[in-house]
Amino acid sequence: MTSKHQALVAIITVLCALFVPACTRFVDGHPVSIYDDPFQVGGLPTTGGPNGPRAGAPNATLAATNGDNGDVDQLALNAIDDIQSYWRAQFGTEFAGETFTPVDKLISWNARASRSQAVEFCKETTYHLVNAAYCRLDNSIGWDRAMLLPTMSETFGKMSVVMVLAHEYGHAVQTMAKLVTKKTPVLVKEQQADCFAGAFMRHVAEGKSPHFTINTSDGLNSVLAATVSIRDTDPDDPESVHGSAFERVTAVQIGFTDGPRGCKGIDAKEIESRRGSLPQSFSGDQSRGEYPISKGNLVELSKALASILPVPSAPIYDYTTANITCKDGKSTAPVTYCPSANAIATDVAGLADRGAVDAANDGPLPVKVSGDYNGYVLFISRYTLAVQRAKNQALTGAKTGLRAACLSGVVTGKLADPDRPTSQGDIRLSAGDLDEAVSGLLTDGLAASDTEGNTVPSGFARVDAFRAGVLNGEKTCGSRYS
Image (cartoon, rainbow, N blue to C red; front, side, top):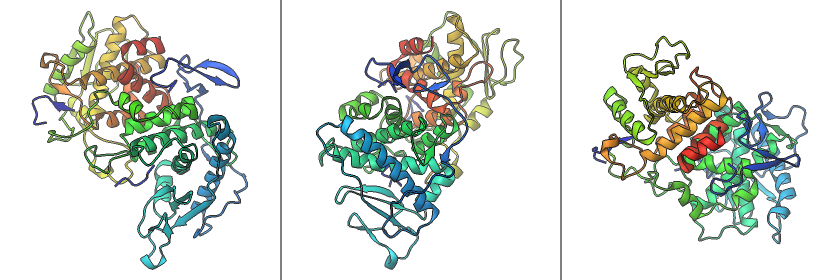
């Protein structure tokens, strides 16, 4: 975040649609609302259990040039086999008149190998190439088996490797379907490929993948967290052509919820409509989006909250502790909302710790995006419980938490308004803040919890609710989670 008065190389080339009225999906031939049940994910039940390669499934017979016949290559080949089978069945229906041409050239390399041992991929050397990619020149897919895929697998689980390769196959699909040309912005190509990967992950979640299974709670959460980790971290870098975490997760969720048909609607205009007035640059922001969490700044934020989501009786603010006695609520440190007292109690130091930048986790594949808005959005979410109290809505239960996430998204979107008067508080959204919020929603989901700190197990649902608020406004929160 920023104050209005402040001086203002990607590793991988790796819901109902946001701007159409449809809010149903057909599951087993039956139309279902994807929002009626907060314990569903895009019409599928939220499940735990198995996540990763299916036990006992025979390995694919595919082979990779320069492969080592190791476990990583076999994981990749099994993934390509299932992804290819999915598109072979779907392509004719989704892209009538175009011809499906399987990716029949697969290349594996070791990014740690010496220059003399490096092979060529897409007319380039693979020496120290930590990457996975699709090559349009010869309709091939290649991957680094030594560094990239093992790191993805160890950090986010084996399904993240499947996700990466589904993204790369998405590039093959858009090429075969003639959805893109040389003039198509890379940003469009990348987010459309993210979307196609999401469509395949839906196929896996439905139990239709021969080699893999994924649950829709921690399994899907980890896949989305992997998508967050490979976001563009600096929007001002000319090489930032893939999109923010907020945008990339949105694209994956469109594919998961609406299938390939939803992905065809992703173009420059659609992406721009999603961006709206959301900040896209750190230009003039010397703090690069980081604004210290302090009592004074929280007071400024409370002014904005009162203006954006006014309530008849403003909550009382306590900035000394989050552990207060409350007869109808529990402590949700570092910020607690007590309905009976209509009070928001904050451990400012604890909230500042939550919003601190974790330099130790700022590696090439961070598990979590740290930063100030991970703290600020939690404070905002506790205020949204006061908003729900004023509307006589339930303050416990799954829909309460999702409403909190959605209304927090509403506030977030409004904080991006460059014309909001300073009388409404001196806090403004910065580039990167949305990514911090999304990451927090995926990891612990506290900003999508009720007055007792309970949240739905699906990070997908939590992020979906937040995004709906950011992009579609307060009415959407009421209609979805009534």
